[in-house]
Length: 258
Image 1 (cartoon, one colour):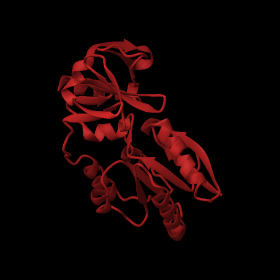
Image 2 (tube, rainbow, N blue to C red):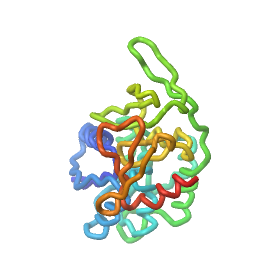
Image 3 (spheres, rainbow, N blue to C red):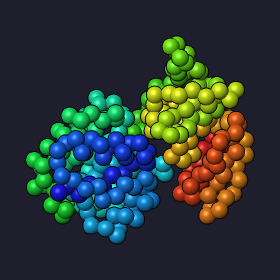
């Protein structure tokens, strides 16, 4: 029985990983699904190491590399990411693998086969990644990328381009991601929130929480909120409360001042 920990902040991606694991034909048990750096650190400090960790790189409250920099994780880690294979390939090491999103069944099967072949190395006595390897991966995520200037949306049997200058925010709802324009028009798009984060200029767009990625100009008011969080008023109005978690408050306020 393979005991699996999933660190992923999008419920759809959590469910997809479990579906793919079921199709491997291997016996497994998902012992937990964690959504943030903060929750992951707390979990590792109070639980025994799993057999394998599937870990997304960008979480709602930061990069998952922060987990490994703050605590010693005694388990093999397979990163899941939306970044290009050619760049990630340069930083692969024997002790881990990666799965490029959207994850393919064959890629997952191969990663688990590699884990089985290398399990002797995963004795739990040493951290799987050296500090140098972590810094290399962190540098990779921060590498400058060409940012999108427009988004392709489908309207019936036609396609339309929406300039990012006309985008107020993106939000996830009912397993879909929608684009909201400044004119309050909604379009379904074929990207996850995580993928959009890597495609758009971080000086203009900020991931407020798991569900909202917002343009700076769409923020019209910021309120102090319960439990040291912030409540954000957007234009156009959002259908639900938009909150910034306590751990992201300082980062968000610094971003707003840029």
